[in-house]
Every structure is written in C-alpha cells, then in structure tokens.
Image (cartoon, rainbow, N blue to C red; front, top):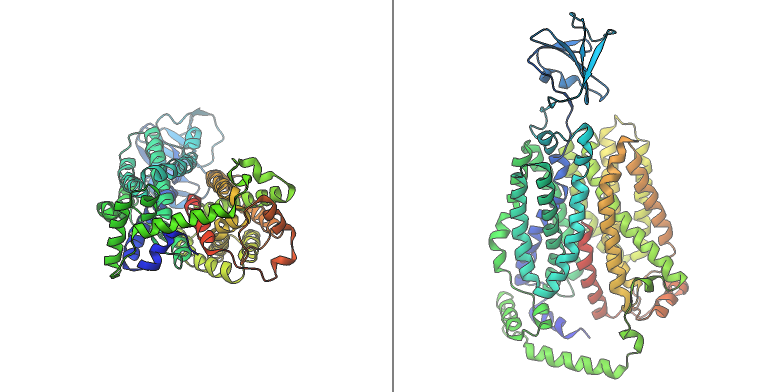
Length: 580
C-alpha cells in the first residue's frame, strides 16, 4: 500500500497537465545551472601572449616571417617556447617571451638569432594577447598569466566549492522554509549574481560573486529535484527526475552556442545569465508542494494546491486532505502494532557504514563510484575545449551525448539490474580512456568521438548510482549512505579542475587518472550484490546477509515494497542533484 500522501496521485493523476506545467517550468531553469557550471571553459581561457614593450612597434620578426604588427604574427605561433623579435620606432630591438623580455645591446639588424649581450626585464608594461579568437577573457582582463596563472586555475575549483556549500545550505533551508521560497530565491539569485559577475571590478570580486552564484545554482538544482519529485506520481517519478539532468546538459550546449557567437567575456556572461530570464519572471506562480504543506500541518493550503491540480487535470472530485490524514493515522497505528525494535530509534552516525567488513567494503566501493562519476563527468566536459578542431562544437557534442545516456540508464537498471548496468559502463569508460591515448593527435574527429563515448559511458554509470546506493543500505542508515556518497561526488567535482590542469604535465594524465579510477570502481562493483527486485533491508544484519547470499542475487525474490522504494528514490533524487 502506498503512503497516504501518495494517494494524491491516485486521485489526481501521476503526470497530468498540472504536473507537466510545473515540471517543465522547473527543469527549464535547470539549464541555467548547466550554463553557469561550465561557463568558465570560455570565460577563463588563456590565449597566446607575450610581454608588452615600452614603445611603438615598427616591424616584427618571427623566425623567417616579417610583419608590420604583432597581430599578424599570432597565426604563426605554435609553442610557448617561441619568442618574437620586435623593432621599436626609436630603433631598439626587443625579444619578447611569454613571461620575460630582453633588450638587445649594440644590435642594428633585425635578425631572429642573436648571440650578443641582452638585458632581461620583467613584464612591467603588461602583456600583449592574441585576440583573434577571444576579444577579451578574465585572463586578459586582469593579466592572470605567468606568476598570476594560479589565480586563473582557481576560478573553477572555487566555483565547485560554492556548489558544495550551497547544496548543503539550501537543502536544509528548503526543508525548514519550503521548496517554493527557495526556488524563488535561488532562481532570482542566479539571474542577479550572473549579471553581477559581468560587472565585477577586479579578480577577487569576480571570484566572490561567482562563489555566491555557485551556491544559489547548486541550491536551485537540489531543491528543483525535490520539488518536481513531490509533484510527480510514482509511475512517472523515476524517468521525470532522471531527465532533469538532460536539461542541465542542454545548458552545457547553450554555453557552446553563446561562446561561439560572443567573444567578449562580460557580454558572454550577460547573455548566459539572461537565457533563463523567462523563468525568473514567472517562477512566483509556482505553488508549494502538498507534501511539504502536509508535513507542516498546513492542511488548508495543501487542500488549495490539490484543488488547483484537480482543475488543471480535469478531475471533478479531488481527494480531501482530511481523508489523507485519517489514512496516515491508520498507517501509524498499524506500524506501531508491528513493534519496532530499539535499534530503529537509535541515533546512527557515519561509523555505522563501517560496522563490519562487508558493509565497510560496500561503503568504500560506493564512495569510489560517486567520486569517479563526478570526476569523469567534469574531466570530459572541461577537457573538451582542448581536443583540437572547433572547441565550441566539441563542447556542444559533449553536452548533447549526455541526453540519451539517461534513457539508457533508466532502461538498463530496470531490465538488466543496477549492478549489471553499472559494471560494464564503468569498465567501458576506463577502456575508452586507454583507447584515446593510442589515437594519433592529428585524428581530431576520432578523438572527439572517443571522448563523447567516454562521457556517455560515465554518464550512464553516474545516472543510476544514487538509487543503487539507497537500495544497498538498510533503512536505519540509508540517508547517511546516500548523503555521504553525495559528499564524495562534490569532492570529485572540486578535484576535477585540478586534474584537468595536469595536462601540462602530460597530455593524457587526466584520462589516465579517470581510467584508473573507473576500472578500479568497475572491478570493486562486481563484489556488490544486485538489488533489482529485492526487498529493502531494514537492519545492518539484513544488509550484510544480502551481500553474503550470492545465490539469491540471481534467484527470484519478492519484489521490493513500492512505497519504500519510492521514498528512497525521492531522497536519492534530492542528493543526486549535487553531482552537477
């Protein structure tokens, strides 16, 4: 029997016109989260550059090519080891490197090779940037190169740190003040802070405002998952909640499109921020969820929302809150008669996830999968602009390939099982990482296709881990298990930008790390029990026995209680949103 609150959907429909309106309005704003999460791939790009020089240039020499201006040289620039020889109008000849410059002594001829004396100077006159692709970025705005390069590399990690903190704060606030108010605040905050980023006056104000933007973006995504989950009935909930991620991926695709059309970073940021302005203007019409209103005993308000849902869905006789409450009291009485042992009311902590060897091994594996999924997701996304070819098309395709992976995840976990879907896609992503290392660098199309396949496989694995985690643990520690896994996911998103920067050490280092983690996760997943069609466990003893009883994994067992399964799906959807 479904919980009393679930009876709302038996009366009003599981995905009627009202739910469709609320769902698509809410997930439309999820695109804004995808936009801001990946905006830095073009906003903080570092173009080719050399030291500035104290004077007007009369001629420029690069190897055997002589030009009248520096702008004509950039098309020939191939390596950071290159330097440019420039003659000033006063006759001085300078060698311009990326982080230093030298003045030739006693030289009158403009030659590329010079064996005489030089005086080395710092780049006190700033830098000259290649603006053929990007007219302006935050790197060129505040000279985040050379000894300030580390500041540029902190832009994405500090944003992800804001994602982590925002998910924790707004998830709690939504439980206390309601989903509606948090959705109003975070959606408006995304617009306000998004616009404010474009008008920051220095690097530090830029990072601070971006940090606040990350908090509200993450907060919106967390609460939007819960919001749509509480409006969609049991029959459509899994697919509806899973495909919120598809709109996040569409946001990534919008980043690629706007980046292609707008090459000045602050204009680019404004266009990205106004992309979802229609939702900000109409989000005040979204109602509070009946689930939260009932939990707060605001029965009259809950009845009003139910009546609105009934009118939209053309239901003539909507259910009554009084009926739901009476059924809930009956359920509580029945539950009390069943007799709960003392362990169900005991306070549990993170150490219970390591209470014995079997549960501890399970916890380590689950945490590793959460971490690997987030790490792989962002390594493939952030690295897409460095694959060669058209970087805008690369990012667009990396976002587009994410759309079908959630469909495959839904089908696979219901037909093949959670573990049997997770293992092959984790191992496949590891094999793809290895394969990419052996593709010649001039085969750009093949490299891009392989990266798309890698993003697809890690996306499928990542899409189902939240539900699998909830099913692997008993009721008494289920929230701890999913919550701790979600935290490991956020750690992965913070680490991912630093992993991408390891390309400067070895071009394949990020892929090697992701491949190793994915392979290890896939192998360890083999030791996890299959949970498809299994009843949910209530105690740690039952959960341990599920792992030991290998024969039961393939045998027929009673189906899981649908109401309990939907409860953990709802919780899982609330926490999985933090993966992004």
